[in-house]
Length: 350
Ligand SMILES: [Zn+2]
Image 1: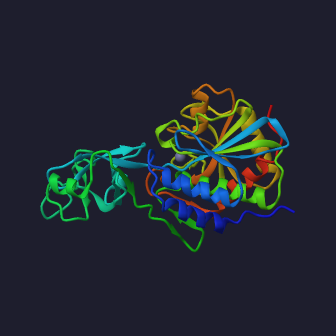
Image 2: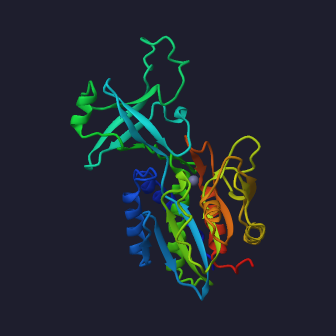
Image 3: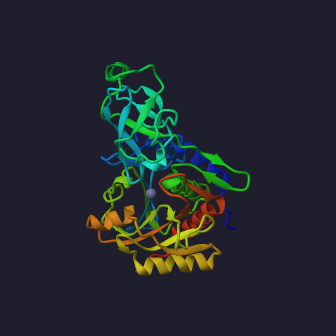
């Protein structure tokens, strides 16, 4: 008998993951968390030089491998400039707009390990002072961090130990609703990381022997384009990225099904693998949507670009308002979990 995924456990894990700050380039703590989680399951892991984590489950066939990946790095920022007015100018990490972080609480992580809290604001926020508060452009020039400390100038800030190059993380704002929604800034792609970790746990607890040796790469540089493009064994035939499905006008992806990506900005995903995933979904009552993501690339397309001769695919939960105030529903997590569960136990596409 096949057990159903424990989606509440997945949501609990998402909560833990999004609460660990991890903008691309600053992922040490979150990788440590994932490493500890896998160690508890007695899964062997190793780190690559970039700081990502690879877990390997040996399968019956050891000469042909499979790889699945999801990324733990998120959007974030870095201190660009210590301003004379006692505020910080930011430089963004990853692709998003300043609009989506206006008013957001943030943390500044100094190199000595201290943390300071702050708020990302328009310089011209106060309507009692600035006539053009609503019209001024939301950009690097006009937006700044107000630190929750008594600081009036650059010298005061430097005295706290804050310097150019310090990482800045955004409040994850995670919340679950009683009717099954989960909201957070960083569902991309920590929802998928939680799904992969749960999948590994299920394979271990149900004592499943996989047909092929299967690697799970928890990538830590996807938002900047090169997380999952390395550490792919020469035996790897299929490479599946698990990353968010993009929603919006004209998209078929929703918050309730698993999204199977047929094409994104990098071009079509492998036709055979896509058809195989659809077959698996149909056979096992997994609800899915096929979709094209217009402005999107994944770790699977990054691996292809890096020159790996692999069969590549992309699936994931549908995430509304990506790279901003993200939301999905537990049924989307569940459908993604189910499809992956059948996928890792199926024959390969050849
Ligand atoms: Zn992503």
